[in-house]
Image (cartoon, rainbow, N blue to C red; front, side, top):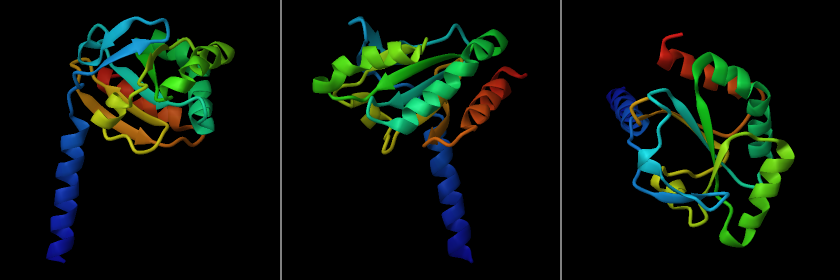
Length: 163
């Protein structure tokens, strides 16, 4: 029993430590070739969502499509923005812009061709979604996609802004 309690406490501490991580000092490119320093990302003091995806990942596309359907409403209600981070390797990066265009995703899209940001956050599986609060702290992480998970995301954002 003591081992179980110790294990649960350790898991809680590890989860809390991961949940409040700062954004790493990693530099990525936009799909238009602009340079973006991840540790300087902000949304004017409002939360933002970072969503890791790849062109070959069907669950990633379903998740980003589902969010796209409600994204304008989310932005109007909470001011949240979504930054989609492609982990496609350099030889496949030319597929990202057409995919984004074909799906009509109005997100800022960054390219993590060397998987530096993916490694910095310890991403093992995609889709991998996180919420960053207005102070640049990662406060929520989620792996995988099931229908309706986007409601969980917006509810977490609402909690952050006190709605």
